[in-house]
Length: 226
Length: 145
Image (cartoon, rainbow over all chains, first blue to last red; front, top):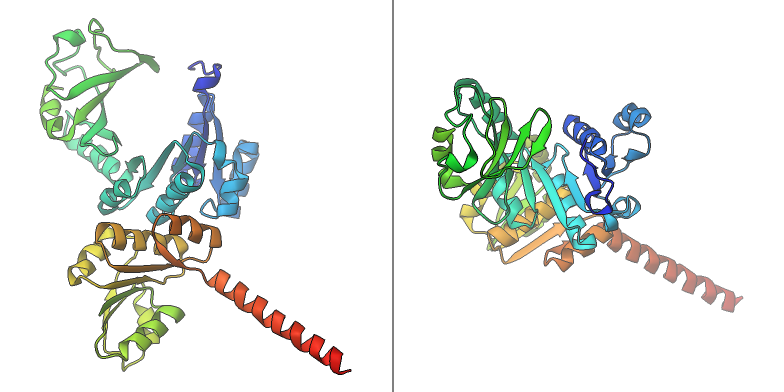
């Protein structure tokens, strides 16, 4: 488990929407040592989870200004809105920004056509579930698959993730010896559940999950290399 | 004027019928529920379109009409705000109004340049006025006595 005992690393994160995604995200963030509050407006779902999550779950509609105030949005580092409604997610992120100047807001969108407008309207990051699921389906047919995990706001760059298989040409090679396209950078390696900080001499291994920052134009070139 | 009305509920349908009486107005009413258009009656001359205000596809269809006015009057504050933001910021519709029940949410988005109308505030003001009137009458009748 990463050590978050230092105050700077421990964040207060508000997660809105206790569906599967919100629930699992909350558990993950708690296990990483963050202070997390999951907000759910459905009483039945709240009751289902409250025994397990205790004070980390709150019953209320986060799009209501009173609720945003009660849950302490003013001191939140991050607001993540992952309800099933695109409009609700957008408005919650915007209200957090307008009323509390929340440094980072993340919205889930289900309709890919809304992606464009969300970035225009000031949401910092967008998790496009349809996009991810689609990429995962492509995984079945496409061995060299890369899953986009984060769009970088206001740019054409994104962070993608891929697991290296035994037939990948870049395994057992040091990063400095791998010819990656321009406008791409390995930012993190996940090996046996531990994060490895990549350096030039780091050797990639079979089974490593690597995250790469890449411009969208270069994604296909990257796919071929991996 | 070309006027798009999102949400064919009690308010949306009334506004559509009223504005539609002026022959210079061209009205387009959108609702995600096709049954909602029943409220417009048989004589409504404008266009109707089945579409979800929380979905960009609706706007891609409707904004080719280049409306002068966009009214977001569904029952959902969030849908109305998002719709107004899309109309105003992406499609630069001159006059965009969103109905927002939550007064604080209404004010927050006013600051962001979205014109809002808040039924809660309007009712509150009206009720206060009515009570004021009642008070005046009461004191008048006290004086008479």
